[in-house]
Image (cartoon, rainbow, N blue to C red):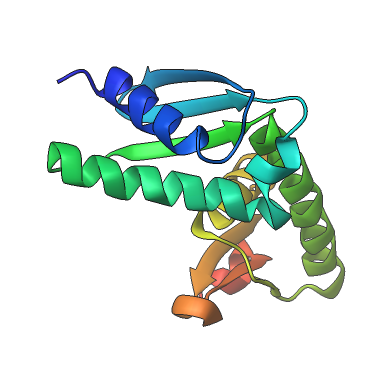
Length: 156
């Protein structure tokens, strides 16, 4: 079964119910499938408030594909480069918390992030700030990302 064709077909079926005009591309990046949607007039409808619609489309596609192929399929939906802009915004947020951590010499906590957003910030802190550590604590809605000095994080 060609997963790219299946993902494209299922995405098209879903999008046809939401928007009228769009371009769709699906690519396989070593088992992670990137669904790229381009739309001019209906961008806010497909992105949603704070990316909620993108997340919902992504989750629906994962569930549909799990039922069709019998295994988990990793999908990342992107609309009009929303993910790239989101990454820039999260890196700016991370830099504010990095500076706060360095200034106060104690841990900073960021709440209300999705697992994907936490992952992007972890990667940024690891790559850009070798003197700092980032990790997540808590469960469910209480999950938060911690940025701390490496010397303090070792004690945790």
